[in-house]
Image 1: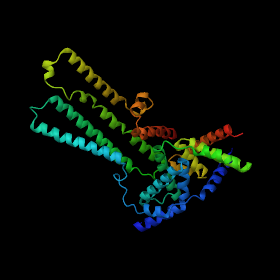
Image 2 (image 1 turned 180 degrees about the vertical axis):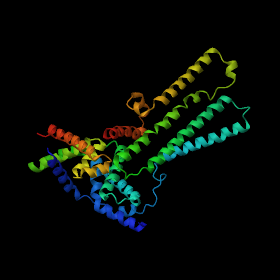
Image 3 (image 1 turned 45 degrees about the vertical axis):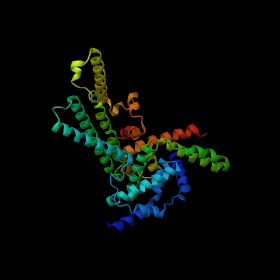
Length: 168
Length: 217
């Protein structure tokens, strides 16, 4: 690929798969300002790596690897982050109808529980919730497929326990 | 909450957020114009400053000491000469390790699998402990710089005891720290006290992450 093709490829990747960057950023950086910085850093890393892109991998696998690697490293640098989810939870439940309020509350709880997970568990649960196959999760993380199954099962159990503790 | 409910909840969350998934086109254009992202250009100013100060210190030390060895060895205070030489050599080794690790960290590919990349990064960050270990090894020579030949002729017993206690203590502490500053001691109070500054936070966080990587293997 020449320089122009690389630039075009980069713009297409970002436009078509921006959701991956946003979702990873949301999981690792609940704070809006940090999140913007993180997305910017992910985009820079994508651009820096584009000439080494290997088409034996799906673009989504490649992008998940970059964005998660950047997020995990970025996350460690930013130790003080506001817990947005709890605040949202308190604000929204009062003004919504009962059904919507319940969904909203569960959404906030899910995000809050995910934010409590360790960095690698967050990556795993994100890929699982995005409905990625165990094979693709294994490729992104560098784990064996059987190990993915075990770890996903363990984190799901952890989330279920947290939900059962806090929801009536 | 079962598996389907969890995924449905996640889908609803994404639907709500998809409207905000907008990337500034100009930002993308700007990033695509970045030419070379070298190790040096991506390094934080504080790291470049540390390296420059270190290089300056070692460089000046090497020039001054070489001059003494070559042209003024017979008149020079041998205690000073040996102490300063040890100090400069140890600083040079620590500096080399620091620089080597910084370059290696920036060479890690962010598109490799997460566990592989994070383990490499964490191991490299943890190996900066070597720089700290070597720098602590310099402690005793800071107590011997000022020794001179008159101490053998003019000193009384009290001066000897005091000097010996200080030097032996510093030697003991430096060797003990050299042997004990290791990843396996990361949870000890003395370790956390030494590495409690802001500059060491990424290192301490890296150690926590290594525990996770090991759990995943």
